[in-house]
Length: 363
Image (cartoon, rainbow, N blue to C red; front, top):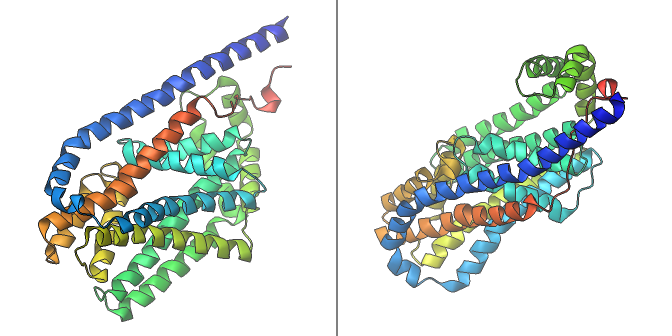
């Protein structure tokens, strides 16, 4: 009698989660829309200032700007897929791209928790396609780290190329960042280091509220074994030399396309801007985004790019038009596309039901 009762309770809990999950997802959408509405007056002011140049855009540059913006994010999604292949998880390209675009939208428009929420969303979506938790977390985390390290290295080299930093300083600094990151990778993926780190995380996680009581007991009784198993799983995720080359090409090309979006936006406005100033403006935007004071660097990124362009002598209207066009594509446009994907996936993604740890599951 106990087994049917337990089965019925688990079925009821699963049904309740399946009903509340869409509600939670729609709540996230509402929060993002509210944030964009708060930003609307500032965006409208920028558009008014840039009205004349925006009305006379060189339209042959608009399509390249949009394609470059979409392509940069798509390459980041492909980097996710390549990392999943390291663990033999073969997820269809459209699925990975959809998750990536939605993840980008959450990160760039949801206040306070957008960055962390985007990571949780991506991992949860991959789990729904039966990617194990270790691989899903590893792929999402490593993609973000590679993206950040590549930006640092390319940014330092870019500042050296533009003569904002002496080449004798920029090149060694870029080498130090690249080699230091490689060294950290070697250390952190060592099985013993991973096992200790995993054990600490498992000990902390079992004290967090809101966990399934059955699984909490599993964590308490098998923390050491779980740490060893997880560490061993992640330690096996070692990309081959060929895969590393593919990842390197993808991450560099992704940033290059993002920068080309800015170049094409400036060309569309028609006011010449020196390449070195665009490099500086691009890095200011990315720095504002990385600070996460506001999602996607809202406000700060536009002010920073506008300030760089104005300081270079670019007319105010043309500088505002370049800023509006670039941010309209790389931030607002990609965010809107991501939210369309997010909404479409609320009711169409596969359901991933919670499963108790096997040693504590009801028999």
